[in-house]
Length: 109
Image (tube, rainbow, N blue to C red; front, side, top):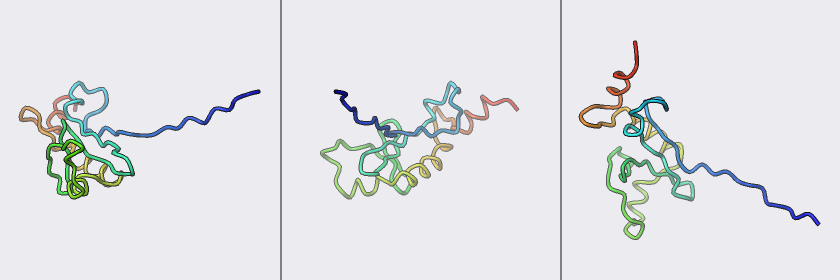
C-alpha cells in the first residue's frame, strides 16, 4: 500500500525592497521589508518600526498592545505595502546618507 503525501505549499512571507542591488555591501542597512502578518495583511518594517499609511514610522507594538485602530493604520494589502516600501526605500538615511547617496557612491558612471 502506497501512502499519499499531501502536496507541499509555498508561501511568500517577506519581500526586501531597496534601491541598492543584491550584491551591494550596503544593501542590508538600506532595505525595507514587507512582511506578511496573515490574512492578506502586510506590514512595512525596518529595524522594528512599522510604517503607517501616511509614510510615518513608529515602533511596532507587541501583539498584546496592537489595537484594531493601530493595526488598521499599519497593515495593508500586499500591493499597497509594496508601493509604500518602494516610495520609502530611496529616502532611508543611515549615518547622514540616503540610500540614493549610497547607490551613487558605489556605482560607476
